Length: 194
Image (spheres, one colour):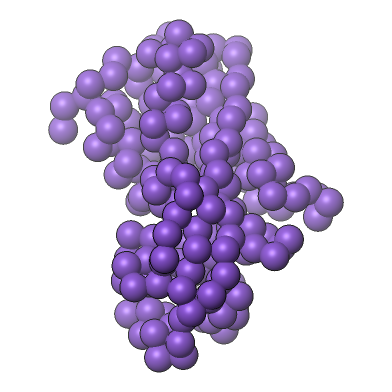
């Protein structure tokens, strides 16, 4: 795939959705691994959680960035009824999460931290997602045919549950997928990093 943008993005994320979104948006991408415990202070709320985690991951990178490299780390959380829904630990928890989201509105926050040279910059985006009522049969089908355990809130908007369950979203669709690409590009332009 051809790159449209000149900086080389070092993306520290195992998320196939983030990788696809950045590659298909014209970035020269290299996937790297940063090992960090994804724990946070329980007093943090809403957007504070992914901001803290994205910055924690970015600051754990110890190599020196080359002149044309930008290190990008990100984190996405689902915030519902004043509670964070991270990646579920098992199918039982995934089912409980989907039952909480059913016939309800939640907010998806994705935070991005990027560094270039010795400079750090962070931002977040938010999208409000409105679910229809999800019956037991629909939830069971999703849980047995898809992979909810690697997704915040136990669902992927780009999958079956998103097609049949989501009534509307207020905000960026790609933010719900895990990376607000348009806002990322605008923030890079503001910093003169593009």
